[in-house]
Length: 104
Image 1 (cartoon, rainbow, N blue to C red):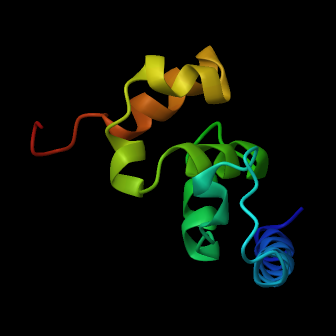
Image 2 (cartoon, rainbow, N blue to C red; image 1 turned 135 degrees about the vertical axis):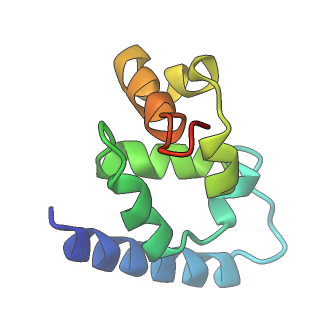
């Protein structure tokens, strides 16, 4: 699935979720995570998919667990591992923490 198709897919999915939430007012679903009602920004989803080792499924899972790019960038490998697996967790962590030309 291309990034544009992914964005369209989640836009449609979020539209359906929004309609269901309007019709389900007054009834709290005890099995639904609170963060799942938050609509994902398609631009952020595409951005996370550009991290090496992260595709559409992993990007969505990461954004459901970490509420911001800042939290994702600061996540330790042991926090990423249950979501994306050991190899991808190391790859994601090293992507955000590789040394720069300034030496930091």
